[in-house]
Length: 137
Image (cartoon, rainbow, N blue to C red; front, side, top):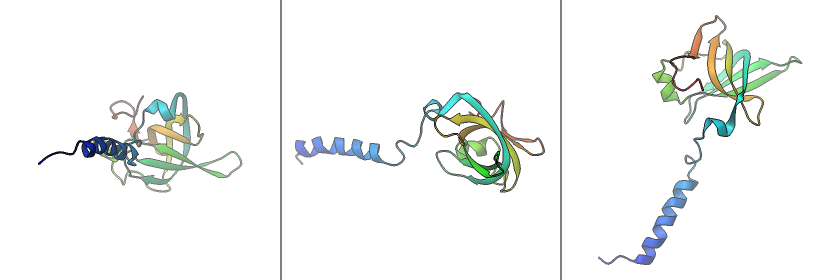
């Protein structure tokens, strides 16, 4: 069977374009592209929800603001697979649980961050610190 060179020449760029435009392609990013290592912060509040999604799980925490209004913080966590490898399960945190989250603030969104540690109201560390895969930067 004879190959058509024109068809082959069009196929390669089309495949590359399809891969670049797929929703998963830009999903992963470096820490420094979104978060600022020089802006560590800590919030204390209650778990609103935890989303076990890829490429990163998300933790939403309701924090009482200065005026008494509730502000929801959005924290990026590791991937669900990495959290499970670290010994964490979906049931470790439930809505309404009091927690303190440490992390690094997003460069351009003050209520978004990457979590480096989560501590229950009882003082028990849920994750973070030495031995936790990739949470401490």
